[in-house]
Image 1 (cartoon, helix red, strand yellow):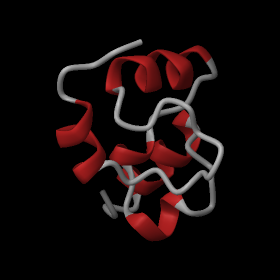
Image 2 (cartoon, rainbow, N blue to C red):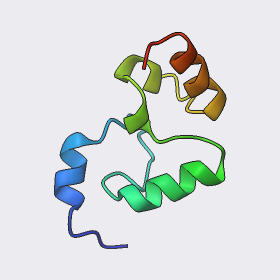
Image 3 (cartoon, rainbow, N blue to C red):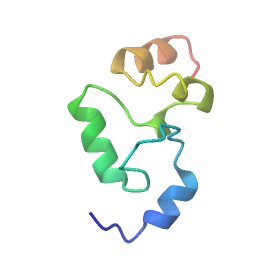
Image 4 (cartoon, helix red, strand yellow):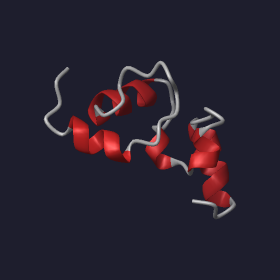
Length: 68
């Protein structure tokens, strides 16, 4: 999928997963993660993102702890 904003998106992408094929293509990333009951890396701080636990549950824990 070609994205006209891919270069701009890549400059802001927090994803640290080396094999990610959706980097810079936010719509593909979002669809992939939502299908798996997850949120994309951009919803998390860098230290949390690196754990690769991007589950809805982890996000809710962070909101409850006021860390997001």
